[in-house]
Length: 323
Image (cartoon, rainbow, N blue to C red; front, top):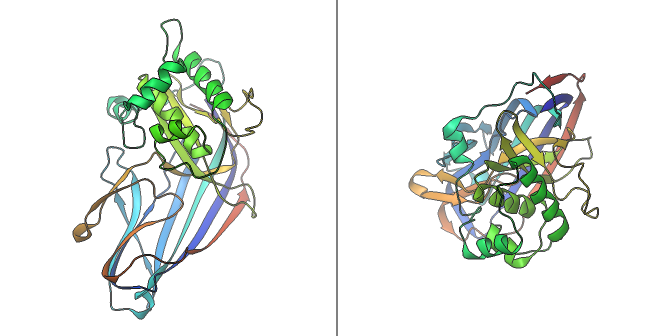
């Protein structure tokens, strides 16, 4: 893999949650801390809770899953009128983004992840439920098993092409974001595509992961995107994106290459969060929105949060590295 610096960008976001039917005396809030990846480097990240005394910083912690992912949490007991019926938090993270390209050649230093990490990216989770009978049946019917005649690279290319052709891109609500449900529904947007791809590859013994991030092209960039990556020995993590230019069913340019347009936000799902006396929880994701729990009285439902987000890109002179 060859990495060429694109630019350095800062993503800032503020959430305002309001729960008129709830009175809180304690908030536990968790956000993901963006990971350091080969194509999203030199990450700087902060998160803060607004109190009557000003902004209070979050602390760094790791979730309890085998992925051992970094997150930012705040466990705040209070008697604060500003936090009685809701909360406001803000976060900012900066990283240098790199273009990615898979190239043939000698002298490229591979990324080595080791046996423990390899096992992590092969495991079945609630989201990647590839042992489910429905998933196995779908894989049988669609020949999604690696043959003895295929290399791992050839097989993943075949999976990539099959998903582009056969799973329509659709942002409609398809139920839970787990592989068996997605295949039952038969359609999905970028995240659901990536979940299916990761599940297929793991079922075939190929280390794979789903990556989510936020567009960071210019000051008007909004929203997020997900895609898949797989680990190839002596090469490293290779991206494949089955939903970019989704109308072009035969587009191969999104396999093995990716433009430096996205800040990495999260790797994989099923976060395990220990909120102390508020319990241990498994949540699908803490990428685009926080996970939170409260000690208090009343109902924790209410209107959708008010969110403000902004990208502040800064040009970085391009430089190429190989891994």
